[in-house]
Amino acid sequence: MKRSPEPELMEGPEQARAYAEADFSEPNELFLRLLEEQSSGALTHCRALDLGCGPADIVIRLLRRYPKLHCDALDGSQAMLDLAQTAIDALPGIASRTRLICDKLPSGRVETGAYDLILSNSLLHHLHEPQVLWRSIRAAAKPGALVLVMDLTRPASAGHAAALVESYAADAPEVLKQDFRNSLHAAFEPAEVTEQLRAAGLAEQLAVNVVSDRHLAVWGRVSGE
Image: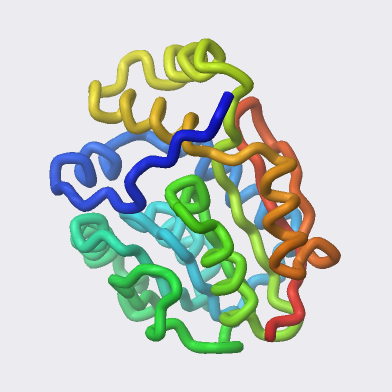
């Protein structure tokens, strides 16, 4: 199936709220489980960067799990970050360890060579130029920084995409079902992501892995710029 790009940002309040209220606990816990495996649990005193944080569910789960970790979280949608701020403010001890940044990549507000851990979940398929993510990761990473990027992987056919929507979003609001369908059509195949890493000079440092029937993940350690 040919890729069909979708809008880069979820800027509408209704769309952002529907996304924030959806139950993404299963893929988000998969993300954190992969992070635990790749880090061997050694995430104390880390400075993390989450690119495309959305309503910050993963940021919140991460900071609750690792009480000495600090995280800068970037998203281009102010509507998403407003919801993230509300959720963060409701949890003692989280706000002081979080900095929300409203900006698109490449961002001059993200420090260069400053982060021990760089995360991104479900951002890659939104990007019209995916190299902006890989360049941003290289620029932000400390030498030896751990990277974990997870995203949808594009199904082989529109029929397969429709079946995934029915399996995982049958009872979701129509706006979410449409978002999921569009995102599957906009996602990259593993071979395409491997080529992106090669073009970014990261193929020797980061590896692409299929981690579910609809997700791929990229992980490894980068040397920074």
